[in-house]
Amino acid sequence: MPILSGGCACGAIRYTCTAAPLFSLNCHCRDCQRESGSAFVPVLGVPKAAFAVSQGSPKYFELTADSGHATTRAFCGDCGSPLFGLPGSAPEMVTIRAGSLDDPSTFRPSQDIYTASAQPWDYMNPDLPKYPTYPPGQAY
Image 1 (cartoon, rainbow, N blue to C red):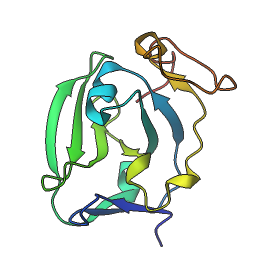
Image 2 (cartoon, rainbow, N blue to C red; image 1 turned 90 degrees about the horizontal axis):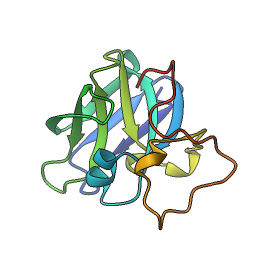
Image 3 (tube, rainbow, N blue to C red; image 1 turned 90 degrees about the vertical axis):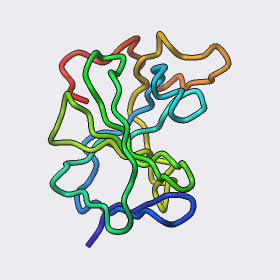
Image 4 (cartoon, one colour; image 1 turned 180 degrees about the horizontal axis):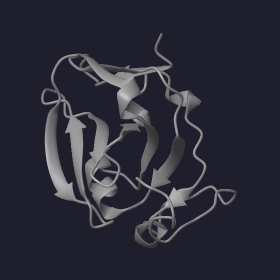
């Protein structure tokens, strides 16, 4: 039974996840800004073993993230919706883009990361911890 499910805007790609998120955060790095076309990307980390693409075939592109690690981003080749990432620094994890969830209202970020790259017009929740780069001791 999926705990999380989602997909792209046109319905060509669908995914499910049978495990609870390991973390949820807002990433303000320049790569995430470019991917989303916005100020940040809301991300949920889930175990790769619990994640499956259930319909369609996403397109992928690889880049070197601000962390210095290779990361692979998945999106719909038809409508362009960003879906999830495969971080090279944590191959046992998938990072789901919260906007692609069927019910994105369940997303509850616990922190803001890469705030050194945040845009001055981006209002961040003052109650969340802020990290100028990636928090020490965490894998993503």
